[in-house]
Image (cartoon, rainbow, N blue to C red; front, side, top):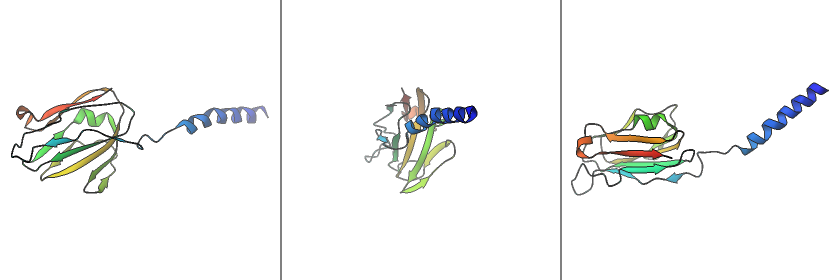
Length: 142
């Protein structure tokens, strides 16, 4: 009977923790959009370069290309320090097991990244080969 009582007590300790678990992917916040190029012919315009967020909260980041160039959006350290819920392109969902290496635009369009940051820090992002044109910024997790 003592063993049963101990097992019951152990179960009682575990149950409240499970009851407190929350789905971090729900209730996400939309971050400011990163837009690559503008509609006036400036292929190197990036109005929003630096974004700050909090660790442990769910976010959606839209990265949009206006189609002036081929853009390869690089953020390898950031991608390694988030839990990626899904990547959405034209209402088609990709549910990755692990982080992407980069996202790439051959034409105009938007790629939505839905994620939860898991480690604090300031992470660099850039458009491969176009950093010197000002196509770079930071993603900061507090």
